[in-house]
Amino acid sequence: MRYTAEPAFVLHARPWRETSLLVEVLSAEHGRVGLVARGVQGAKRHVLRAALQPLQSIRFDAVQRGELAQLATAEATDAAPLLQGDAVMAAFYINELCLRLAPRQDPQPDLHAAYGLARERLREGEALAWTLRRFERDLLEALGFGFAFDIDGDGRAVDPAARYTLDPEHGPRRVLGERNDARRESAMGEALLALAADAMPQRDVLASLRLPLRAILLHTLGGRGLKSWEMLGALGRLGQVGPAAERGEKGPE
Image 1 (cartoon, one colour):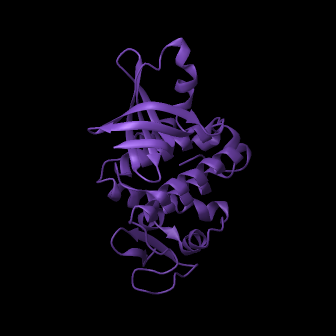
Image 2: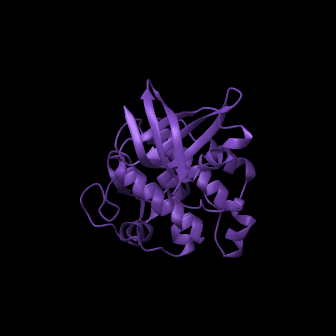
């Protein structure tokens, strides 16, 4: 199979042998594609090497041979976002989600579009937590794991004053009772309605979405978590430092 001027976003690149790279990209027409970029470490190949950095939008030519395609050429189609602080971790998280969940050689136009939107939101410095919750929602929908956030699993309208857990098979499930653990792992109905309407809620309301959505993602990941989650845990509250905190936000979790 031959790829010609195929648009894609670079998810990950790592050295392979002495002068080459193994690159993972997200294509609208072909989903996740693994590329072997040979001989890119030399001084004369710096332009190609620069085009193969994570978050970069590219067009590439390649020939598929087995699981990996042999890269012929690649060129950047714009300038990748220049991120700092918490936004770098947010981008790492988005890329890791795509690496783990996007299937190889399976068209993903909706996921490709969602990635492009998230990339621009990171570039523009939009609220990180809201950018990530929107991407998580859009990723689940694109991969066929989504559900309505304004209707619970029993077909009733979500009550903005209630709290809900998210069940992978059932959708939103109303929490009955006031157990602390149930409240901690549940989302405010107001937050679910905001996510359904794509309208950013207040900070404390938005924060209630993180753990319920993580539970859905963990189920989708087959129970094996992400390195970015481990890093966030090790670093503690990333949002206590850097630009996100200065804007009154929590970090990229």
